[in-house]
Length: 460
Ligand code: FAD
Image (cartoon, rainbow, N blue to C red; front, side, top):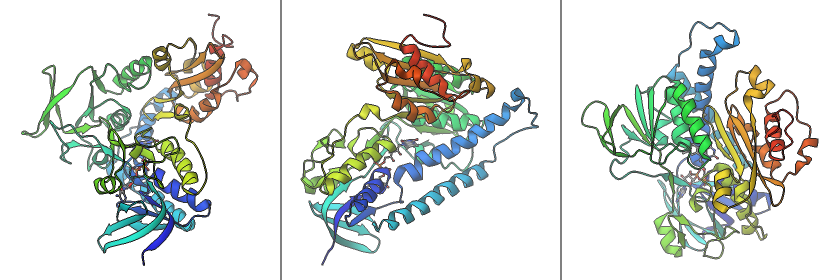
């Protein structure tokens, strides 16, 4: 007889493992099926390895700028095999820890490809063969994969995705990055800091185009200082791999030689074709269509994370996992406030935002007042020689409340949670105490400025 679980989760990334643990915490018997590595994209070839490499790159830059802090250092250079080994150790350590954590919640981890054959039956295909299990409810958390460009598809060697870029054997002399979004810009920082000649080609008119225009312009300026060339409003039309290095051809006719070409033009949900067809799953473009309870069109089948194409963020997947887990175990929860899920880019300098930015407000015709505060005016930031960037807080005139915060500067991703708590704040922000001197004061100052109450900005 087929083994039966109250809930079966397919995929063990942030969405899948979080949903599995939440269901178990609510008393359900749970299995999670994983066809590759526990932890999914985020842990194995996404958030964690990229941030680990960025940390090495940041260390290198700090040492290179040590003289500015009055510290003489003879020299600093990357030891790439050690950097890669450290990254592997971080990822492996977390994977081991996560596997143990999942099991400690009595969630069964089943290795193999999960295919839903009926709303409560799942076939698991593994090297050992195929078995079937039964489920009261099913949560699809199958993640996403990088989008290819048909004119120059991934070859795993020269034209590569973020996955290969995170594990290169050596630092390339040169790299062209097609796409100036989050992943492209983070990888640009890693390899530029390591000494590669990096060129970003972005089809839109600025880097990080989902954020306000000023953010992209500021990043372009800062990237120049790192030696990164940003070619915006430009498209790559072909990649000629006949010689030693690839010749990247732009629409303008310009060519750039590069040892590696990273294509980072977005990600696309992974939806198992057999599952979709067996369930007659309703789709929304390439993603699984869900309502605000994360229910698909099939009763008892939920979908979350990158597979539903909402945020393409690990913490977005966590939030959806919470909602789906409650609903899959007899509760009634609704997903709300997508705009309150913070966005973070771990570049040099970092970018973080939450709520509505200026361009969204303009598009919606909202009457807003924008407060600004600068890191160069902050004591702690200046002490750390981290004076680049600013924070902007957006106040809706109609409600007189903060509705969005956008930040560019050192470690602003760590301020994103605090910025989230400012959403909905009134001018009472002036009464809140922030430690002095601290970088977080810039956040308070920007919010105060949105009410015309900045202490350290001259009167407007
Ligand atoms: P995934 O993490 O992709 O997990 C899906 C899992 O499902 C995979 O393990 C896959 O093998 C498995 N699977 C798929 N189909 C089946 C099947 N049929 N049977 C069994 N198993 C299956 N997000 C952030 O919030 N912060 C970051 O800093 C960040 N950095 C990133 C850096 C990079 C380079 C990349 C590529 C992504 C980054 N992301 C980041 C995005 C983040 O990784 C994803 O949003 C997150 O992993 C989505 O979680 P998920 O659970 O939906 O899917």
